[in-house]
Image (cartoon, rainbow, N blue to C red; front, top):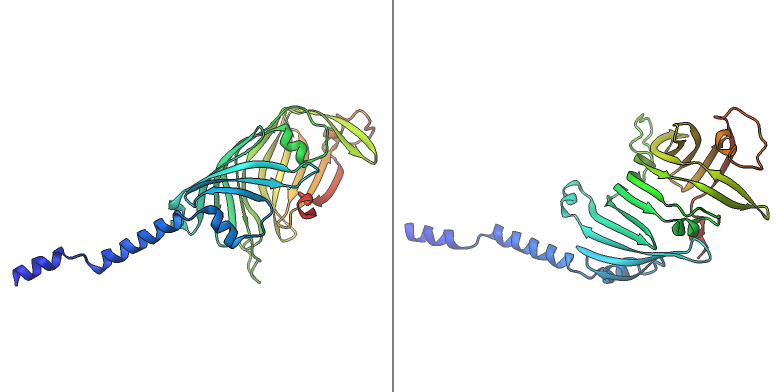
Length: 274
């Protein structure tokens, strides 16, 4: 009897076989070519090209038709498996486009996505691809920006905003030294000397929606304007008298904190043109 018991302990148990099979299957999935997965699950994606690597680590060239000259760049990722413990896919991501360099973490859940600790700079060449303006040769600095956006609707009778679609978390700031900006309107180019400013990110709830709030401030913490982005990618822009005073052709008179320009428009509506 003792000899039989000893030999039985030397045999691999079924549990260890199961663990081994799970690890092997996970390793096989992680080694799948990223290009094959993209072709299988998103074959008609026009914005991603030339994918290389696998799920664990890889890169892709992306393109966005925001203007006559599409904005192109490269994204590199490195998978972070511990986020699976929280029911999310997470990766360290590097984004490059000309002189633009951004690094941060991307996490994707069943009904949400988020960006954590995004830092770097957005080059003026990248900005020129987004807006048809004459811009100074100064980059925008991105400092520890974190965003969380979720989809869903608030349950009837609930006072909690956790189920609202839109931006549920936002933090960090953008800084810009400014300079002369020329923007076309009505066949004419208007110029404004943008002061050094920073954009503080937060969230705000309005009209039963969770909005991303971008508060524009000068170096003296004086209000220059506000931007609001909702879950439908509609952007509300409000600019104050203090900012418009930097425009030579502007002759308006109002207290400096008064909003004098209000515009509502889709964000990056050029993406829908192709």
